[in-house]
Amino acid sequence: MTLHTLNLTPHGLGERVMPLAPTLTLPNGQRWIAQHYLCYQHTVQSVSILLAQIDFDAHTPLFAGQDANGMYLQVGLIGRENYDRSNALRPHKLVYGRKWRIDADTPTSEIIQTAFLAIKKAREHEVRELLTVRSGDGKTSAAFSNHHDLPLLAQQRNALQASARPITPLDLASAVRAELSPLRFAQRAIELVQLHELAGERVLIDLQLGAAPLARQLEGDFPEFEKLQLSVLLSVARLHELPYALMDALIAHSDRHVDETFRFRGFARFSRSNQIQAVAHLSLQTRAYAHDLADVQFEQIFRANNYEVDASRAPVLGEGELGRKNRQLINQYENLLGHLPQGYEQAHETKTA
Image 1 (cartoon, rainbow, N blue to C red):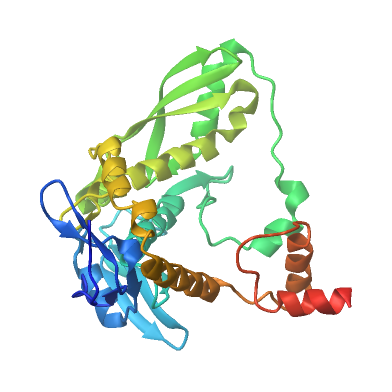
Image 2 (cartoon, rainbow, N blue to C red):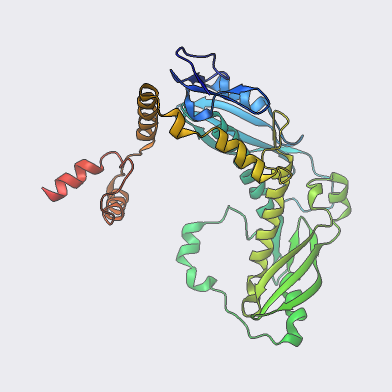
């Protein structure tokens, strides 16, 4: 590795190399400066350039913007109205996920990974709406969606508690089918394929999504779920948790689809086709801290920059009950390392004076 005494040309817009930062020569002869030796000052323009280098699918645009609260990235989804379960073809509809805040000093890789997570969570929102429960009177509810009245649910908690029902091995398949009967995913029935009774009174349940109604087939949305086979593992005594386990499995399938499809500059960073040992080896090459920080001048620059960034992350302690609760939690730990919330020291000193 060699040392540079002048600022180098940044890797990209919004990036600046720390003075005296070492460069790494990779096995293929390419020279590189590790991301932890860069300073960041991202703008909407630089975030937009990064998002433009991400590819996912034709239904998921990415947006970068800035409002009174700062920069953000946001995911759009071009889909259908999930609550329209008619037999007609539904028009496309563009909806938006939440705004994911981006600090100017956020490392480039973290911005890319924020987009990755934002896509996962936007899709999860849709998947949760697509798993529905039919009530006894024939009405349908998206019981797993994020649109329920949480204060109301908290108030009614006693009426919401599930109770386990004793099940004999002979009744197991019937009990599973009874749990599946009111459930639909994107208007598809969920079919029991087979059961595998395991040690410890556990059961492995193999399931498959049935055929969608003709209108949904013609629309062709979420093709990665077509005739999906999946398995869930449950305790026999907690078979009533099957809808939750099914929801987990559907979200996991959606997440894995993102893992394999999301690309930055054509590279599927989160694909399991990447050999994890090779990723670890490359990462270790960029983290020769003992060697790099032997340069006293650079060590001072590096540590000062890290301190400044970490300190800027510290939030305000909070007001009223939230501040009291946070202070009580923090006070449980003696000699706590890291940066304490803004306002904590003053409040703590006032309390102990």
